[in-house]
Amino acid sequence: MYGAIIGDIIGSAFERSGSRIKTKNFELFSKNSKPTDDSYMTVAVAKAILLSKGNREKFKVEVVRQMRFVGRAHLDCGFGSNFIKWIESENMGAYGSIGNGSAMRVSPVGNYFKDIKTVSEYAKISSEVSHNTEDSIIGAEAVASAVYLAKNKKSKAEIKCFIEKNYNYNLNKTVDEIRPSYEFNATARGSVSEGIISFLDAEDFEDAIRNAVSLGGDSDTLAAIAGSVAENYFGIPPEFIKKANKYFSRDILEVIFKFYEVI
Image 1 (spheres, rainbow, N blue to C red):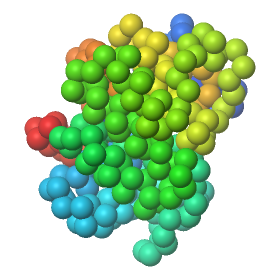
Image 2: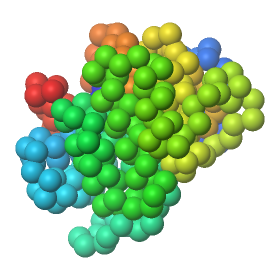
Image 3: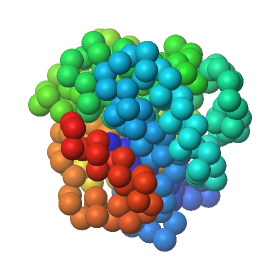
């Protein structure tokens, strides 16, 4: 979960038009760095997992409840207009989004559950409450699966093979090959593979984040996806975690700390 949060915070400074970059040479935690919807919805999914304790039906209820509860407290953090309507509603259902919002928030699923089938099932649930299209569901399942596989000490080659075989993503390009022509894309189909490749093409956690941001796209989400997997594969420098913690209020930190106690 910290991998997604740190990736989001670092990437946030380079997400908007005019701030996107095509280089790996940049300040990691700058004056413009901040948590966005990626971080807060990741925390909401983690809290839903903690409260539901492995009960699927309860998770279906809690993941909606917690995303709305956390989201309403942070409405200015970067949500899309349709998702804001969903957050503010008491009963609005999924709205056919093809976006990458499902993939950016799913890392707690891959970290918590103990087998790949359950990871996939809960990733789907966490997506389809709002992002109920095939692309968004597949994106969430792919990221959660990669997180799970990295946690269980699978090699990059094994992770790549599994994602390509099960989710029909092409992960053969390198970051250097993608970067020149890549443009901002907030769809799941247009960003999940690039986020995973940013991890696959990295030498360590920091390099994965730099790869993702350097693509010049939806940088906070690309870095959240890359960081989600890189956390389990490489580990995170402790100083990154200390810096990330400073951005959050006590209630958010309590969820994060509790989640790491149980995984």
